[in-house]
Image (cartoon, rainbow, N blue to C red; front, side, top):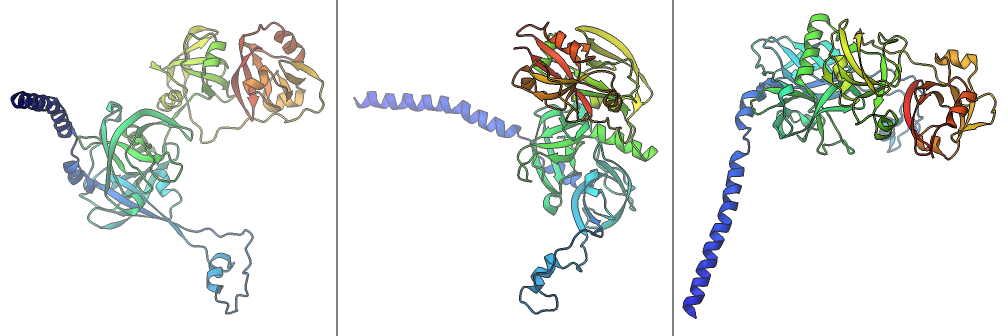
Length: 473
């Protein structure tokens, strides 16, 4: 019995060794493959700088809050209340902190526009603790890039990489000054590429999970080779601090802006002059598209070079030889196209592909706004179609909106229009590819639709046009 028990114990022990050995090997092998950023930090952190700014306070001519106690009294809380209520107290200057990195040994430094916006003084602190006054050589709001210059020589320079070669899952590192703690290092991976943010249509952001906090803005994002592949710019946060989503401007985009600022003092971008929107599943169905792709043209602006070539309802699927997978991709591609160049644009129109030629204009500083439709008509005529009370447009409204036809939505009742998101004050201009002349035509057309049909409807709202998909019930 003892011998049998000993054999059993020995068998279990050997089995355990063979079971654990692969696990131990995998763990050891995984640890060996983790990147070590020690040498990268030692070699390249001297090229990263801390940036502090001063913004002079403006005189406040607004209403003042009165002191709750007499100013000349000796109440124990006078000093406290004077700080918050005294209308004679001078406004204080404000300051901000950010990061940047050295582009050339003679003192050119790259950072974010929002780090230095409105600054009356910019101080750059180098790794050797020197503090230098910087001159703003140029700045671009749309890309959030600014170029600074300090009076210095023989500065440590960082090497630029190619952000276009980044891969999702690749290790990256950030060096910056979060909360003023300069030369702090955080690491992570690229979690997505070509992200479009609501306020930044011309930057295909690199998304990472690198910890970025206030003060990191303008600092470099390195790849494992120690080359700069991005400029840390924004975070997604509901608290003001890092929550796992950070966004960097691709260095390819940033350096194009820098080169234009150096040579011209401003940045030129291509402009198509159209209002575009996402192709949803319902809209794709309404346009008889086989799959969801491209950018849907909702409106061609009057000042656009595409006027008379593109039209509302076109879906741009290829621009200058580049595929347009989503609506977010198009502004980036167009913005990088040389102003004045002629390009091929492939669109889906009425379910068929067409190849058009366009000349690219320059993106204006400000785009003219279109007049809004009146919220309420002068009188209600009680014409109803598809769950909407509608009214003909008078000549003054057509002229104000710059349109020749359409019907005004006075009220929306439960039904297909309400489900599609149409609201009071909208102007319906096109239905199922046909321009709407008046309420009579619209009512007659609505009678031809069958239950289950999904119809594209072009709506003018708040000065802009947009397609919605209306499902007939």
